[in-house]
Image 1 (tube, rainbow, N blue to C red):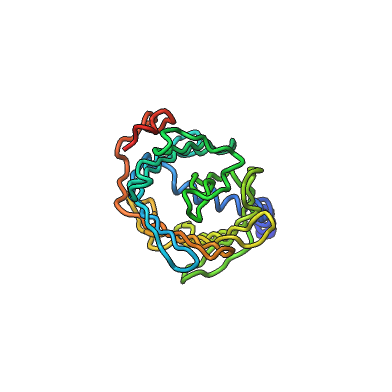
Image 2: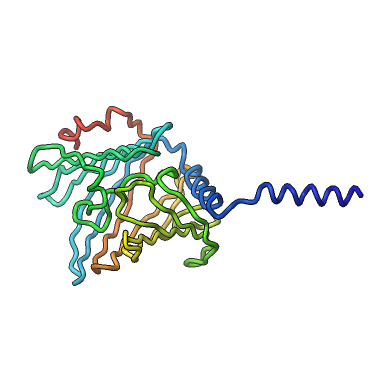
Length: 258
């Protein structure tokens, strides 16, 4: 009788904790974010390599500064250092968990700061295959989720999660994300346009661990399957907890960034 009671109790507990695909997808996304929390701030150098459908390339050098905001999304500042014709261009992003992100672009040729309208965030970021909405931090609250199943990818056992943007101005209907089970690192994202056709694929390569906790890719490759173009991001010289503060991230300060 006691064994039967214990077995029945365990069965009830298993039923109670069973998650729906929607709940499981969100739980996976929350674990990805939990492992990212607490970095404080960092700076990193990024080389952006743009490749057109004919194989011709152009390169841009960018310095990125990011600070964590405990009660909301991250704040980031991207400063273009090369080539000369766009040197000094800067993008400031305030990511939000539930509200629309705030973004401002400083164009030195015009000597003015332009606010990126919510309806324009699906547009190309500085001629790349990354949209403005791709540049903002991917907060859990920006999506609803559906766990599809498991899928191997480049030797990694991965969760496959579908996420749906809650922002009505998003350029995407849905995204399919592969997240490795070992460290909860994003490995691949497929972006589907509003017509539900595959638009782009983003892959992550060369992960390294910093501060014995935070994994960062050495490269990210975004390939546009509709126009044949690609944008490769090569990351180097990560520096964590360098002492950035909120005053380093203001629209008024964009004209003075170096």
